[in-house]
Length: 441
Image 1 (cartoon, rainbow, N blue to C red):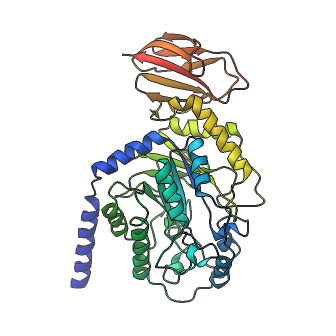
Image 2 (image 1 turned 90 degrees about the vertical axis):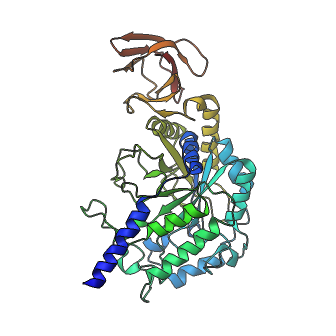
């Protein structure tokens, strides 16, 4: 009984210390920058790209760890050009890059001392994370690092209770204390050797929870997030932490993410969490239907679909993290380049209505959505057959001007009993007809 009491007391103390997390001023400034940035590039890439069947190929084909490790000998991305990657993102209007450093297969894309399964033991023998980090710092793009909490290959990861990776052939007894120290060591490398890092993007918590839809979503293990998050904030206080656990944000997290869903939606069946009104938000989606390179996936989203997603995310006060899965040799598929170039061209005209904005006073509507900044309200008409836009319960403001953002042409507006009616001419060639309302109290 005495032993149980002592353990309970220590747990209470640990929870209390964890609950005392207060973000630093630099962290709060980073959150503000993040919220204003609105658009980022996600990069899923590694040895899992070689089979051309997506990043879950090891799990889906039940490849044993001993066999999967052989991919290390074939990963030689001689066509990789970090400057091209970063320049492409910058020209697309993206303000940050989230790079896979270690996915669920356990391969590390940097020169790590804590795992032999890493980029330096491939024929390529160059530190991918360093090259991307150096180029991001050079071009003024912030770098976020994706890091998997689960591992389909390591014996010390508690795979016995995991929902995935059961075909990897592991038989040794796991040891989470060992695995936790391994993660701390790797995170220390990433936050010590690669300059300023904008944030850490965790994934894999869900491997230890009940299946989606189950009433009990609690974890089967104690991840010791107090220790993990505390280490990150100690090493780089400004570094933001997000965790793709599909749950209400935990103490110590600095932004909330949604996978393949806009905040507040659950069309994918992954997003059970409510959108936070205290933390910055981010939604991630793929440019086709795959995260990692999939040679059979040619379902590339249209320019219209991508603009709609970015705009609706901004209308909910959220960032849009758009993913590409480069080929094994390091090349970027031409369809990806084409779509990103298109986003850059659109944002060169309409970026004012996206960057630095907050959510509209109305949730996204059937016709489109609203973003706001200062005394300007941006009405994004995404349905290009509309002739009249109605804005009910308009805030207690006076409309000074109403015009199209692209050419400043006047838009007819009528305000009656807090209801605004805007009259426009349908434009079948416009991806998003943006109307600017300049207001005053």
